[in-house]
Every structure is written in structure tokens, then in C-alpha cells.
Length: 296
Image (cartoon, rainbow, N blue to C red; front, side):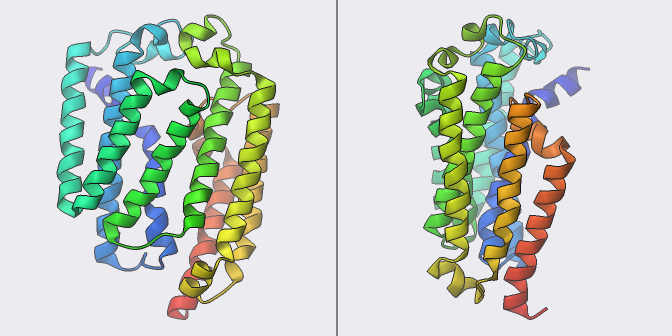
């Protein structure tokens, strides 16, 4: 039981967010370069370790708030399965592991991982209670994952890819706030997350409209950007845009009609239409990019 709770404290289900690290190698057309792919895998695990350390830190800091939450009160520290002292030791282990892996890649990647940790440290201690800055901090974390994936294999990334990442992560962050405001657990809402008192459903919906629109437009512009055309030698990537639009629309449907969205990870790993759509999008991107490069 103890081992299971320790693993649960690491939140391995949340590691799916670190798949953003693979975006640069996919869109650089180097996915079949196995030495670079191995470096990307190392970068992925470095972010898994550092993100787990952040989750542990959050659970230590938020232990009292979690205890009044309908679901979070079952988290290992809040429920008393893992002591705070034990959590602090595990936190240090994950930080060290991440830095060791990062150092094995290159110094720029070490800086990126350090920036990710610093951003999340500031989030845990202060920014999570500041309206708007809280979701921008989350977005910055996703952006650093993409940047980290690029510096790990020493490839350049399109500005449009960065902008797309910013918009889609803002969309996910704002959707989470919206779901928390409209969800069934409305008792002690401010104690659970102080910043929710500065949001309301209408405001969150307005922000989400902007974020969703920005995601679709920036992705479409990326597919026809000069850098994309030079890299892929084709303009066919624009035909993957409908999959992005469907994914956004499906997520909004689940958010508004099914009252989901409080856990983005749960949606993208359990909603069958989103899973199928994501896989088709991934295959379509791979075929378009690598067919033009390798002629298959």
C-alpha cells in the first residue's frame, strides 16, 4: 500500500503533458534519427522527474486545502498515507534525478529544466493565487517543455509552434478553472483554490473563446509558414487543421455539456473520440512530413 501511495504521489498519469517535448523532433522531420530520438526520450524523462517533484511540492504546500476538497482529500499526503518528511525526501530525489539526466544532454537543457522548476516554484508559492497570472504560469510551463525538446536535440523551432503551444495550454488552464467553478464540489471553493474567487463562469468562457480561436488560427498559420514550407517541402500540412478544430470543439463539448475539464489529463486519456482524433492527427502529420522527406 505504501509503495502504491508513493507512486501515486509522483502522479505518473500527468506525465502525458510532457509529450510536448517530442513536438520539436516530430516537426523537425528527425523522428527516425534514433540518436536524436534517444535524446528526446531522455528529455521526456527529465521533465517527468522535475514535474513529479513539482506535484510533490504542490501537495506539501496545499495539504490543508486538499483536505477540504471532495476528491483531493484522498491524495497521499492529505490522507496521511505519506508523511510530509517522506515527501520532502522524495522531492529531493526527483529533482536530483532530473538534473542528472539534463546534465547528460547539454547545458541549455539544464537551464530550461531549471526555468521550468523555478516557474512552478513561484506558482506554488505565490502565482497560483494571482488571477490570470496563474494560467499564464501554466502556459509558460508547456512552452518550456517544447523549448526543452528543441534544445535537447539542438534544432530550431518555429515561432508559430511556440504561439500555438501558448494558446492551447491557456485553453486547457482556463478550461480547468471553468470546470472548477461549475463542478459539483462548490463547498469551501475559496479554501480549495483561492484564485477562483477572482474568476466566474462568464469571464472564463470569454477567455476560453479567445484561447480556442488563437489555437486554431496559430496552428493553421504554422502549417503554411515559410519555415514549415522550407522544412517539409509541402503545403499539405494545412489539411491536418480540421483535426485540431475537432479536438477543440470536442473538448468544449465535454466542458460545457458534460461538466468535465477539471482534469485535462483524464479527458485526453479516457475520451475515445479525442483519443482517436489525436492519433489520426499524429499519423497524418507524420505521413505528410516524412513522405516529403524520405519518399515513402
